[in-house]
Image (cartoon, rainbow, N blue to C red):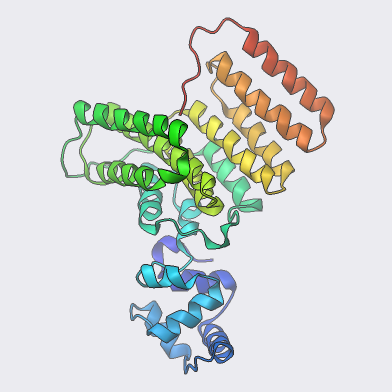
Length: 330
């Protein structure tokens, strides 16, 4: 399949379905007839859309129905941004600073779109996300002209995120998703257009990871499971950019909870195994205990009770150690 970063989104969606231009046109005409919206769509029309011409309102309505996109989303988001191609960006973008910025930019532009509320990243794709986090190479960002991001600015942003975390504890995340998205948009803009030192870059990515994780939690709290999952993938990428593998391991563990709740207990076991296997050796005992507790629960849900008991004992041993540096909350 072609690279979604280099194609018109309709081309990417069409190729993902295995449809040629003529096949898409035929299906649209058939669906239009079912909906009472007669269309004369042909291969040439599809070609024009993929070259930049926007379909008329009737064609967009029929195409949205064919692709399972809610009508209210089509009305509120301009063509072609309502097409369900943007979810793939989190999987297809390279694991580099530029790729992470691209993922965040698409996330904050896509709003709260959550088609049918299912987990859209599963199976091989989910395994790929996990493997890429564990093996992603180092990358260097090129210099970008723009305003300088100062230490004082970063301190203000970090304090804002701390406040958001506190409000989440007090109010619940469902009410705060817009705020988290706004904060992520600000940080994404600074990453994309600002000038900063290596130290500030690290803080930007670390803060973006925290905000994207919070947004994911808030989306789940609001029942937007697919959206929450995409925010978690963004957080995982940003944690890698900040070289905070402990944070990345924590995010994988949290992703596993939601995967398990959807019925895939084996996938959760794989996620937490990867998280523990790639967590830094200097991880505080409290954080290590947390990961092994996740592993124990994952194994238990997957009916591997003997292995679950061993993980639980490991978690207990780590918790019993004298902790000199407590686990930092995201």
